[in-house]
Image 1 (cartoon, helix red, strand yellow):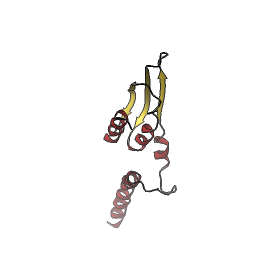
Image 2 (cartoon, helix red, strand yellow):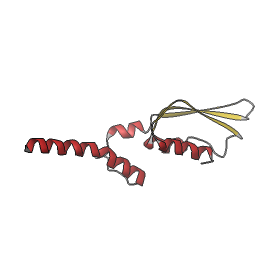
Image 3 (cartoon, helix red, strand yellow):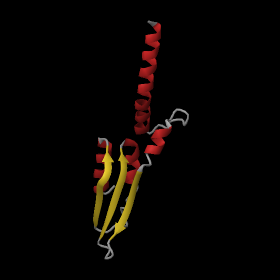
Image 4 (tube, helix red, strand yellow):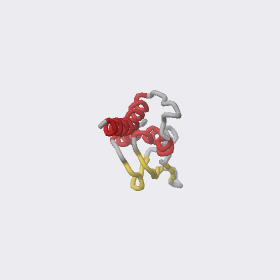
Length: 114
């Protein structure tokens, strides 16, 4: 019986580590690198934003590709040029995968002017 309890405790502990790390990231607490899973840092940078401006300068289209979730949403906000862009800006998310509401909030904040 003790083996089953130890195994279940380990499974629960391992399942809660990503949740604890995500809460600390949201709270702005720096997570020590040995504790931080390597995949989260890599996934945060799986977003690519490419800006293409019209030749007449009246519009810019930002093409967003990649995985958009809580860790990559912060990077997304800083990919736009809020002061240098023309009046009309199009954010194309057709090639992006939106995983949670934090990305929707980040995109809405970008549309509202950062």
